[in-house]
Image 1 (cartoon, rainbow, N blue to C red):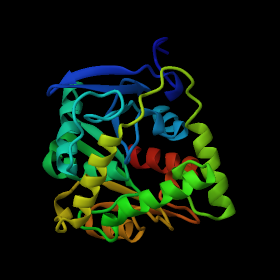
Image 2 (image 1 turned 120 degrees about the vertical axis):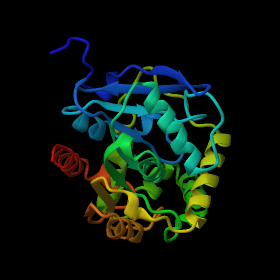
Image 3 (image 1 turned 30 degrees about the horizontal axis):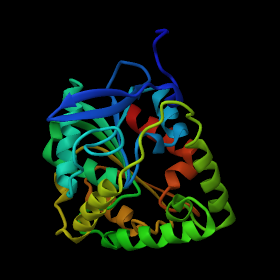
Image 4 (image 1 turned 30 degrees about the vertical axis):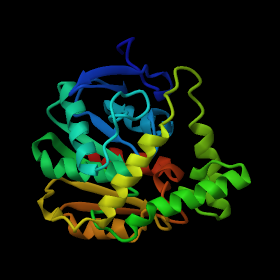
Length: 282
């Protein structure tokens, strides 16, 4: 084994690559062979918001690259106010690393970005995994701002993390899964990322709101195999959107986790990792 091979997200150094006037912060780990899996993250998230069990599980077999998009966390520049511009920035980052073919794993807002990349740069993308996300104009997506604000207030009043409400159900299973997920996010003790700024968070909310109001896109142009996943009780991006994506994508496979919310892939991280590895290996 290469002694420099990083096998744990907790130990992955934060690097930067400059392109398009932006210094993109990123971390990578796993074997340096094969098609890399590029992670596209959710609203308000930085590098430290990826569940290390999901990252490490996939990195056991694939090169995994996670990054902060423009204006987010340790990346420079101003956060765009459209999903399409975020997708263009992601492509700039991917090409800056010299990559010509990638798999994309997009969660929530990242799943929206992944759809745009697959439509605009089809030759760049081999396979897609999109979770907790929906199509342009999807059911209830324009309500993300209201739900996010509401649950942030609930969290403040109960001294909890908003993700406990936004990502997980209020059942005993959901509450326990949320606490375990939030504990995992704190496992990295050194060289943590910068939190997102309020300005960038506002820009992302605007972009998601616009995505929710857009006309439906023709998803039949996405010819790549797509794994579509969610919990059965997603409040942020209602689960009906996941079913809608699976129906409209020509080569899709659907996974819905029971008694799970927006963060179903983190609640069922073991099953999800196994499914992704099997899907990518086909």
